[in-house]
Length: 340
Image (tube, rainbow, N blue to C red; front, side, top):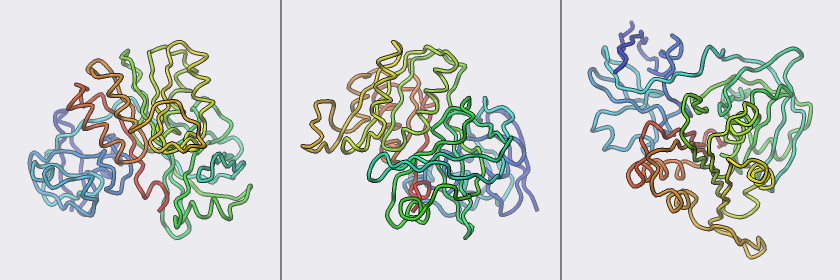
């Protein structure tokens, strides 16, 4: 049994099988809707039910607060249809025909950039290239059927393999292995690319990039892609961490600002240690943005990292700084994506 789903305002329609999530059905039929984690934790796929009923599925309340559910919203990565539906959601254009593929890869380099951050460089099979948009992610397919998601940190034009930045989550199925027992030349299986966090190239608006921790990875990919393409839109990068070691590629970000006149870099620490000898900005990273950009009405914002940072930025930038809600693009690193 299947149900017809109509998207508003576009009017496009697709069929969704009973028990199938709305997101899975849409992607299967070539319609790209906003999404991130695909497990009900980040809220990126939120849509509003205009007609019909759904089974809301299992999700985290922070991703769909009760007040949003009362207003008719649902998470399309979890919701399954009970009737025909009409759903209001912003469709994604600009991804093009990028195929999602499963393939093996080999661990080429394991580099510890901090006590809890590792940079993995993966080699693909000979003559294989992974097409992706800067900012997207891959999923590792673990032997027990679980999946772990990580954003690519290299630009699509860099065909030397795949670069990932992983934070160690003690007790995490995958990151414990990476930090304790993974060896170079190990073979992994992956699927990708995925996600709708990527640079909107059809705009000339100045951009604010907001990263927390390893949320720097997809932002690095986007910035390096932009530099490769010769884009010179004004860009301000804010990178927040607790202590200085959390800004594990600080020299790289500073070098961008030193070498390119259209790039500014603002590092921010919330719990700087005496040993950090820190003289830069302190506090919450999204608050630093608000201090420097009290009016964001003419900007685009790309935010990536801890869910609390991304959700706080979305709420405050829209409500207090005048950012149009459809100019906020985000990838929220949920606990599942981080490897718990």
